Length: 50
Image (tube, rainbow, N blue to C red; front, side, top):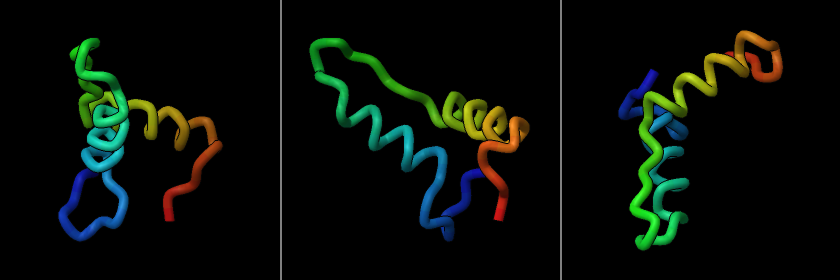
């Protein structure tokens, strides 16, 4: 799912979310987690793949 030419990718989303988490919590959101959520949203017809 991740691709260099994509404007939006699972990695970019995970980086954006992870950068908003305070350093004291030391948490990271991995791209695979975002891919799983996006797949679930696609399968539930909340999102449509363009």
